[in-house]
Image (cartoon, rainbow, N blue to C red):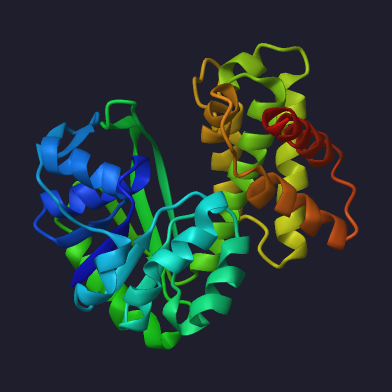
Length: 308
């Protein structure tokens, strides 16, 4: 299987690097500056599961159409870069590649389906905390490193199986799901709660739990998010909801959404794609969602201040 990894940042660099480390045919679609950095230093990954540095194959957007056929595109962009990403990978999809999106939330599926057709877009998500440092290293921040994927149509089953086989030797967890949309909704519920609350409070989970109302508000925010999923026909399974609740209320936890890191460095966020979209779905379902409203207002005000 020939795999095109969009970007070599935190997520793409980690999972694509692990695939390359395991011998998979993985090429990174990167901008010239990152291509030069990788050519000079190799792909550098620092992880609790083992560090590595290795040379990797790269291709630029201008050369992709002439680079031959790919079987799968691992789409690891941020939501605010989705339009540029769609344009960049279009030659690979036109050549027969299937897209495996790793974005947060749900809204990107509609956009990818419109661009490429639903038959070319798998269900998928990842669980990882990773970032790209100023020196170009991929820094894996905890021990989570998992990809879940699954077919949205029966015609996609062979492509899903082929990626799972290619990823099997790699040093990360891969799971094939028979209901990837449910899995994506459950992550959406967890992430929207985590992002909304940690950004709103400018604090990690453990710090929020030290506040008098911290646990109560976190549980209320989770209930709001899951009610939206329920209205869409994808209420979290009880075991997943219990796990999310435990993660979000763990005493002493340093866990926080990557969106909080984006806010703290003054950068753009995926707030519209995650918190804003979930609130829009709540309103469409006639749900009040007061904590979602507050978190979204806060993030909108942050963005207004950032660009002013």
